[in-house]
Amino acid sequence: MRIFITTNIERAASSTSGFFRTKYGIWFLATVSFLESAFPIPLVTDPVLVAYILAERLKWVRAVIVTTLASVLGGVAAYLMAAGFYEVLSRFALSPDMEAEFTTITTVIQEGVFWFTLAGAFTPVPYTIIGLAAGFTKANILMFIAASIIGRGLRYALVGWLTKQFGKQALAVARRRILLVSLLGVGLGLIYLYLH
Image 1 (tube, rainbow, N blue to C red):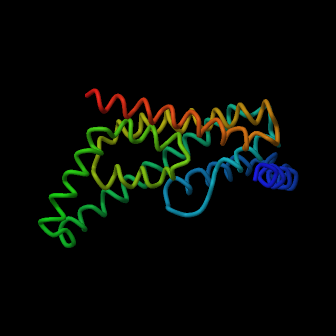
Image 2 (cartoon, rainbow, N blue to C red; image 1 turned 30 degrees about the vertical axis):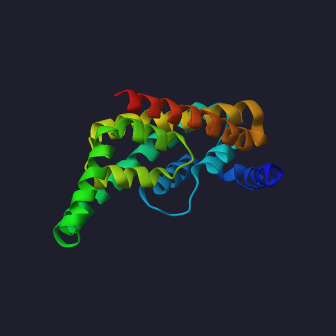
């Protein structure tokens, strides 16, 4: 699997390096990052970020910042779409029994929105789902944005730094590290929730 990922990253990086060096490269990276976060479509930003940094190694910090901001804006878009959909669903689709259960789930997400979002923003869990769930439950949007900036920023900073350090093997290294750090973060979050 690791060889497959590395081979495909090498192929993609070498075939797109010219494009990423144009003024459109950073816009393409931002667009992919936004779309991955805003809509439940099968896009993954990490390989595009790796390919961009391989083409523009000296601009890796810029790429991380642009990717993070575009991803958070996409998450806010998902949040707002879900918040609007909630109004429709609550009026027409929730039975009284379902509404009681939904209220319980909503309370759990609203009370833990920071940790819920932080875990989802950093881990391999699709971040769009986090944005939709937070919006659908009308969780605190400022907490959602703060946790998104921290979680997405840390994730993309890790991918960016690893790409700068390890080149084409960065994605495989990042996936191993993200899983380890994700498990640690989720464990700490669960301990925090248990103690409160």
